[in-house]
Amino acid sequence: MAEFLEFKNVSKRFGAIQAVDGVSLEIKRGEFFALLGPSGCGKTTMLRIAAGFETPDAGQVFLAGREITDLPPNRRPVNTIFQSYALFPHLTVRDNIAFGLQIAKKPKAEIDREVETMLRLIRLEDQAGKKPDLLSGGQRQRVAVARALINKPGVLLLDEPLAALDLKLRQRMLIELDMIHDQVGITFLYVTHDQSEAMSLSDRIAVMNAGRIEQIGAPAEIYEAPRTSFVAAFIGDTNFLEGVVADHPEPEYSRLRIEGLPDATVYNDKQIADGHKIFLSIRPEKIQISRDRPEPKPKRNAVPAVVEDVIYLGPTTKYWVRAGEHRLQVLRQHARFFLDEKPIRWKDDVWVFWHGDDGFMLEGFRRDDEKLVAAPPQKVGEA
Image 1: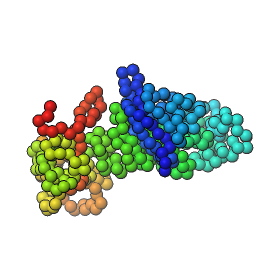
Image 2: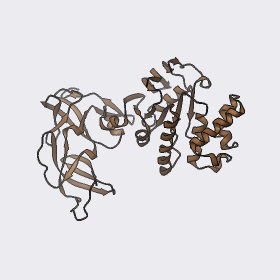
Image 3: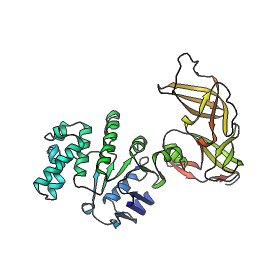
Image 4: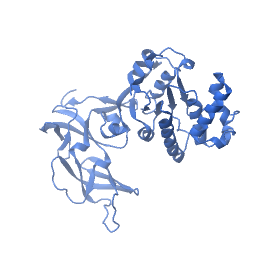
């Protein structure tokens, strides 16, 4: 797949707020791409710039190799689906879907044929004569998708399209959207603050924070190998342990000195030098828990701890343990569960352990106006 929708050094400011700050991004033809981040991170501004509703202060936007930076919305081969769906309440489902082709003055036979195709795609043939207020939220969302797709846009822009739906309906619509994308094959640019939506739908994700992109990658890459502390904290749960790079027992591994805990071995993919302060990020499901001290193995990190809280969740049990001054979260998967097995309980003495490949060395971060802002690794003793 070649680059299809491109943002080159795009910036946009609203008064004192830098909504987008020098963002460059390439989205491939036919890709399902998500812009993910907290409120105010700039993701919706990026979508509005792609749609032509906002003009960047600097930078360029290209679609299929053609610059569209200053092109008005009605001359761009893109369509947008908003949270509200914006269906015409006085029109039927059929007429809502047909609206774009009618405005374009297409022949009636072509309009009828295309509308029938869209009705089959969204599986609402039997609802074609109803008004939007007689449909469920999920059905209205599907009508909005069909109305946007019938004009055959090069890109479909989706701005938090599932935000108004309840959890079960949202989960069902995730499957519907994925299926529709697979069938029509056009480029989807999907804006959301919900990590589960982005992870389950997208070919790739761009995680945004304070107007900039922190990381771009496939869902598994974003989750399993976060490049910054913000990404690690925003995507799923993680444990952060602050430490200092002590030495390198092996070429690709470092030993971390963590106050109150045994030294930890970790894969040093960022080649951070000795003596620098960093954060060690470990996902809860990567940590194992046992009453018995684990057998020593190369690159295995083992820490004694005390259980502070236990929550049984059916498929998993979540533990919070205290190791020295550090509180860690551990997630135990019930691949096999024995009712006669003595469970780990509150106040039990335990061992928690993980492999050095399952932790990641990350830069530090600080809170700045309620946002997480990256701070580069700092050598001990530096101001």
